[in-house]
Length: 382
Ligand SMILES: NC(=O)c1ccc[n+]([C@@H]2O[C@H](COP(=O)([O-])OP(=O)(O)OC[C@H]3O[C@@H](n4cnc5c(N)ncnc54)[C@H](O)[C@@H]3O)[C@@H](O)[C@H]2O)c1
Image 1: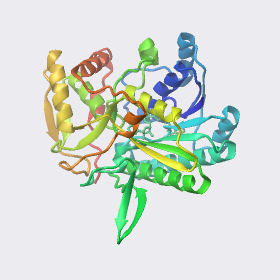
Image 2: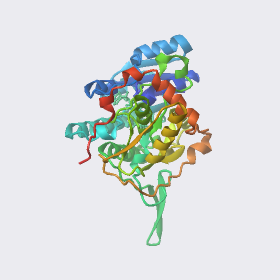
Image 3: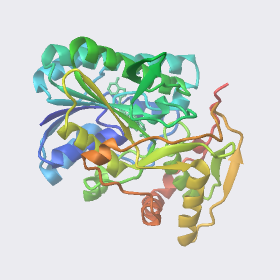
Image 4: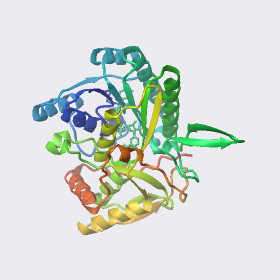
C-alpha cells in the first residue's frame, strides 16, 4: 500500500508512520508542526524530547530501512495538499492532522475559531484531493468517542436503526459533543458522510477513546523514535497525566466526582486498529464507523489503578478531587459497543499493572523535565 499520513509528527501519527513502514508499505507523512509550536506557545512541551519529523524519518530509515518520506506543510493549504496527493498517489490516507484538544478549544474565541477552521478545512481539502486524484483512495479519519457524549442509552457503532411512526431508517448515532473540539469532530464526520453520499468516496471513521502509553514495537528500537508525550492539562490525556503526577509526587487531580466513564486504549492498539482498517477498506459509497476502544473505566477507577501500581513501585500516590473545570455529567450511564475492530482481528493490550509499571518506568527517565505548572491550570468551560 501507499499510505499518506497527515499529522505525521503527532503522538499517534509518528508511531503510525513507523508501523506501516515497518510492515513494508510505502509511507509519506505530512505535518505543519502545529502541535510543537502550541507546546512552545502554551509552555507545555512533550515530556520526552523528540527529534523533529525530518530527523526522525532519517533515524528510522537508518535503523529499519523502511520507505518513508516526510514533508512539512499545512493540510488546510489546498494547493500544497493536492500536490502531495499528485506526487504520491496514495491508496489510503490517514487523517490525524487536527487540533486534538478539548481544553485548547475552550481557552478563548481565537482558539475555538482556529480549532473549527483547522479541523473542518483540513477534512474538506482531503475529500477534494481524493476526488481529484484518486476517488478510490480510502480515507481513514480519526473521530472520537466524545462525539457521542454520554447518552442514557447504549452507544451503537456509528449507526442506529430508528423506527418512527411505523417507518424505519438508519441514521448516524445521535451525537452531542461536550467541547468545541468534539463538536468539530462531529462536523467533520458529517462532512465526510456528505461526500460519501454525494461523490461515493470510501471512508472509515474511527471513534477513538483517550489513548495511553509511551511505546510501540517500533519506538522500542531506539529512544529517539519515541512518540511525543504530553501530560499537561491541554494536550495530555488523563492516564498519561496521572502517571506523570504520580512520578512528580503530586496528587492525581480527579475532576469533580470522578464518575465520568470513558473507553480507553493502548497506543499499541491504535496501531493495530488503523492498520486493520487500512487492510480492510470501506466500500465505495460507504461511511464505515468503528468504536475504537478496548475497555472502559471511570476516572476514579483509573486513579485507583495508578495508585495501586504506584504502591508496588514504592510511590505513595495521593488522589485529590478538584472542582470540575468542564461542563459534563459526573455520574452517568455508559455502555458503548466496540466489536467491529475485534471482528477484524484486533488483539487488545489491556490496562494491567505491568503496563502501568512500564509507563512509570518510562516517565521516571524524564522526571527532571516535568513542568509542574503545566499539569493543572483549570481551563474553564464557563
Ligand atoms: N490521542 C488521543 O487520545 C485521541 C483520542 C481520540 C481521537 N484522537 C484523534 O486522533 C488524531 C491524532 O491525535 P494525536 O493525539 O496524535 O494528536 P497530535 O496533536 O499529537 O497529532 C496531530 C498532528 O497533526 C498536526 N496538524 C494539526 N493540524 C495540521 C494541519 N492543518 N496541517 C498539518 N498538520 C497538522 C499537528 O502538528 C500534530 O503533529 C486527532 O485527530 C485526534 O482528534 C486522539
